[in-house]
Length: 108
Image (tube, rainbow, N blue to C red; front, side, top):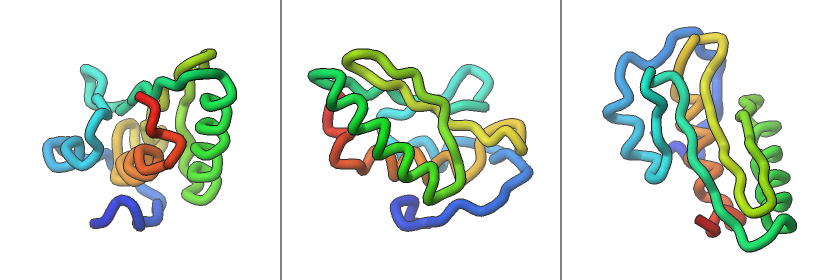
């Protein structure tokens, strides 16, 4: 599956293993329970942070899959989980890959 071009679909079961999925989204980390992935994106200023947040919102709208975001003056942490599945699904990795590919995501 090409995560950059894939479209999210309704999913009710969590992935049985993250071993094949995490390497496809470098920089993203799973929580201790393996139910959430997240990544911190750093920026030079708040304007860049907000441009990134807007771009993430476009992906969320297009995929109908929405992240949790912690927004600060020079960083944004993006986290994904699929609440209806009680853990991580392919949808979380699709969105994580697409967020990482944003031109606005160059700040680390």
